[in-house]
Amino acid sequence: MNDQKLALITGAAGEVGKATARLFASQGWSLVLCDRVSEVERLAGALQEEHGRRCLGVVADLAVDEDVDRVVDVAAQTGIPLCFLGLVAAINHPAVRIEDMDMSLWDRVQAINLRANVKFISASVPHLRRGKNSSIVLVSSFWGREGHAFFSPYCASKAALISLTQSVAAELAPAIRVNCVAPGNIDTPMHYEALAVEAKQRSVSIDEMRRTEWAKIPMQRPANVGEIAAAIYFLSSEAASYFVGSTLDANGGCRFT
Ligand SMILES: NC(=O)c1ccc[n+]([C@@H]2O[C@H](COP(=O)([O-])OP(=O)(O)OC[C@H]3O[C@@H](n4cnc5c(N)ncnc54)[C@H](O)[C@@H]3O)[C@@H](O)[C@H]2O)c1
Image (cartoon, rainbow, N blue to C red; front, side, top):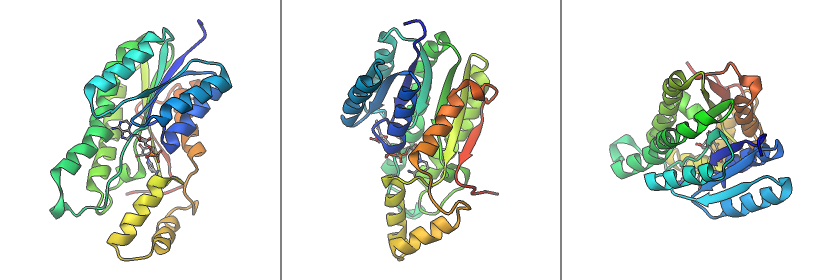
């Protein structure tokens, strides 16, 4: 029991979340996985069976403070030291012109992509302080590095995470290292949905939209989920022991001014 360590991962039923959960499980971590969909319980059960470590899935809506507290309580009640918080959950949204902005859309995106992460960090810090070599990794986006037309709610939320990482990292070091990963396009439904809405907005075909977007990437392809999970895992590891407040770009070489 003493050598056990617990990772809490949000958005664990999503594409990047699943890959991250699998990677941590394969490295001997116990897990609390949360998501708003019940698939997270099945994933937790399968990982516990496969790796023989405690693995719990919790269905929760991260926009609800009480749900966040409940997830953190589940982690605390395992009795296994919480050493890692991985904040992967987020939503995207349909393309929207600023003059057509429905403020409830703006509020919903900020509630999940930004506020829920603040609440999660706040609720978890007392537990992470008791863990050993504890760390937090947030997940921003290359769209947090540079604003993108028609996606101002998402881009603003992801830019804010980069600043949040810096503030909280400065506050919590050296006890807890806080860092962030900013992925570029990832080979996931979220990417293809974003391509589809933007293609519609710009009145071009999805194929043309894909070619245009991928041509901007020096690697000429989106990341696979394992490449993003690896960046998250690296920042949690002792190999990243001097990374504090960093945002690691995992975007195939895209550069922003
Ligand atoms: N897919 C991409 O191309 C891409 C690019 C850059 C950054 N990202 C970021 O990477 C992360 C993972 O993306 P993904 O492609 O795996 O997305 P995904 O949609 O597959 O996974 C996100 C998960 O978050 C969960 N979630 C959303 N709202 C929730 C809520 N209120 N309560 C609980 N859970 C909630 C969803 O159910 C889902 O399982 C996100 O932060 C995303 O913004 C993705």
